Image (cartoon, rainbow, N blue to C red; front, top):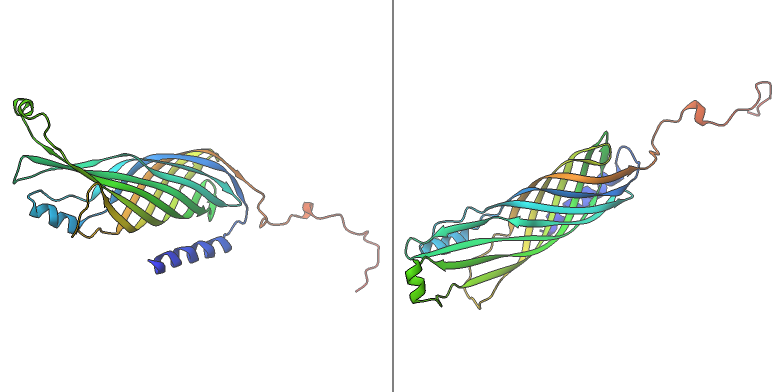
Length: 247
């Protein structure tokens, strides 16, 4: 993990130092989009298959939102998932159904390495937290429920802390709105179950891939490009032609 984060920070610095246009950007953007998050859990699948349930696909989808501001091409903001899908799987060994799902969000830091003709490219680093939950329901007829209205449906949750390196790219039209693609690798070093004291829990897969297609709204204000070519009209008037110059 240290190697991944180190490479990401190094790449961010190199791109920042070698940006081709040198003009600074200020302003801000609000972003809303549809996301897909792939985080397969082979160890958890082995455990729930042993209990008679079918496997989880590891694919989640839903709506993501985010936003932030630019200053000197540096970006600070936040993003997260707000409407999240859940997987519902049935047990072949009982009348129970399991529901699994969750979400996350946090802070984001970036550097706008390229913004030219509306095209933008921004490497980012994020600090994220959130959680996932597993709930179990017993499939009952209405008559069975009336006979036992206090049927217990347990639920357990989990807490996660993640670090992410990503790229945001796309087109912003007239410096005000556009479409962006977010691609993030997410590493989760901290995971814990909540709601019950559990031992011998399955190992959590710490690696996931997050992709979001977003609409962006706001205002980007390009600063003066200090790398533009100097025109003759920009120069001060010269000395009279008949004046002698000292070589």
